[in-house]
Length: 196
Image (cartoon, rainbow, N blue to C red; front, side, top):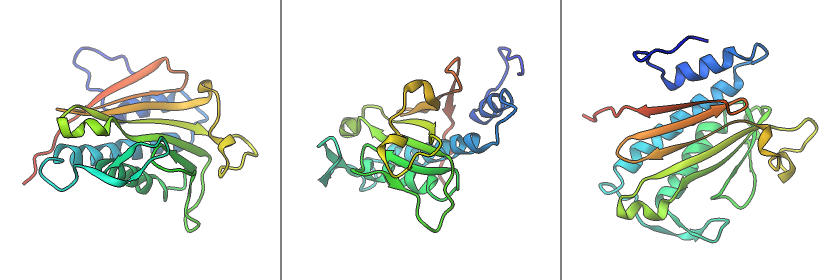
């Protein structure tokens, strides 16, 4: 691993690459999942930043699995993560706080060996008062012989997590990520690209 100094620039991409190199048996699939999550977080951050300017604030007429009223941004964030992840061939299923059932990979796409659990927009009821909100996620390997359409594929001890993290959407977007045994974590701040 590269020794970091005070002038080192450790991007999320660099962190993921360095962590992958620590595992010679790594195929790159987990790294690709993390890149896709980072992309979805950037897309969600863009919409959250403009929430007061576009018609994305307010409640829907639906509830999530916790019985909470879904916000428009909840639905957008949920759909963004699902669509960023469902076609890649790396996941075999997903579970979201916004969905009552396990999210299966569409038949036209290849299934992978990993499951993703996520809360697409935690704290979304606070968005109307300009309080930070975020995405929480966990990546696990689907156990050998497990049916990814069943809860057993997701109900694993925390020690089985391969990666976990969160994104906070506020004045800046902050992505915090840990992989492996949790001994290393990366905190990345996404730069905002000015719109034209």
